Image (cartoon, rainbow, N blue to C red; front, side):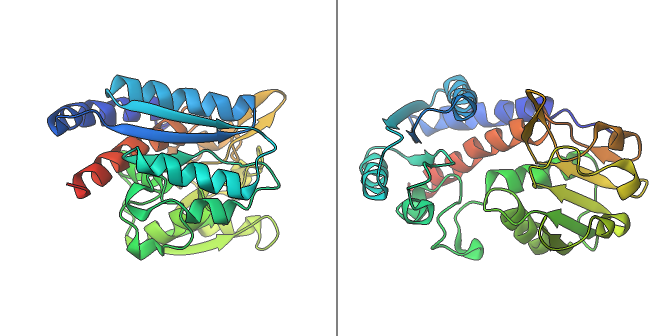
Length: 267
């Protein structure tokens, strides 16, 4: 089963639309963008379009690529005062301390669940990509509890939060990164979640028949967006998410499910 993430996202927006209408006021979502990057800009456009279809007002702050940590932190604090929640679009310029910036996001406005000062168990919402992984597994009819699960990558956006959430749902999770572990570990996995950003690293010979393979890795290969898994893996996997069009659209939809949760909690 190749899961159409765009179709799953559409069903989520259909579920969210009447719930947003019930709020009875305009909801404002802030987004901070530092520097100019066409890839980042494409992600921002997707989020902006999704916000518009739900009647959410986007408040965008653009900062120069030369911004200091202090300037970005100040922008976060100012934007948090006038929005219901906010997004700091990553990556930030190399001279900016990302942890310091993310730590400035109030926990009740942290729609991406990225503040490193807040533990996973204390967060009001979970990371959108981790929620998307779980949603896609459910759409594929995959039982999570007790399943041997390998998460590739330990990053703040995919690997770490996905591993935590899957463990909390009863999966037996192991992790490996490109620096530690072996691709051979995948052969015994019931579920694979990959966020390595290494195009085509997972090939059919690395996985067992019937595995659920959730590909959350995105990188550029020959001027096209590619995932961590060779598309040929779809012929062997029981559940497979393509790149693009798999995890990405669902993760964006989860931002807006999180936003609704945060708005409800602030009443």
